[in-house]
Length: 251
Picture 1 (spheres, helix red, strand yellow):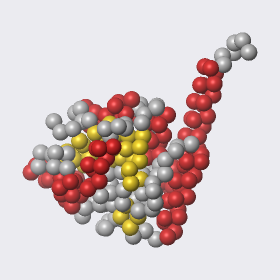
Picture 2 (cartoon, rainbow, N blue to C red):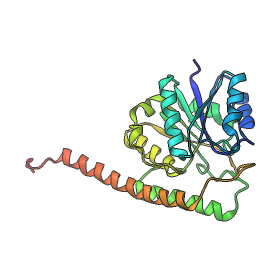
Picture 3 (cartoon, rainbow, N blue to C red):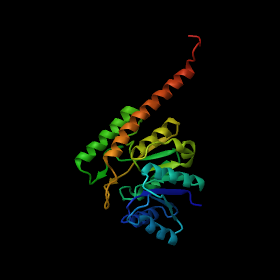
């Protein structure tokens, strides 16, 4: 059994999946790849099935309808845990995350539990983004850090590597986010559980083909989730204070 699994959610990514698979296996030949397809109308799932028939490293998990990024990753995480993979990656299908970075993540995971691929640690490394999108992304990162207390430069990053122990400790049934706020909630949950989290620098390149899945609904969900995480943090802090200073204790 391979120890590395790369999970890639897909919806209308038929143009990209062969290229991303080839790049992953060129960088890490022993890795396995799981496509979680949300019943793509462009035939992404059927194409992935064809790849799986000719390469035992490729696996496909079909979902009956479009349920979103978070549900796809949760399904993939459960699939990975059942099969005892040790290092479980999140990666986009559109080649914006460079698979050549995989060995760097694995090296960092020898001393940490969750590795975040950061576009901003030590500088900005983004290719082909307009200035307004860069400003929006930086502002979102600052907002998340200020509201939740997360001490990371890129808390919205979707390029990650979990050691299996992290996913075993997280109650996946209680993860509520479904859009891009899923990335924030997973990192925040691991952080509050006390796992060691480090950032490694990555180069992020805007997708080469297909359309971005970002929309107003996803943005609204992210704003609401960040506030919920703030209240969760406050509740946990109050709980810790109550344990340290129980009612009726000598003062």
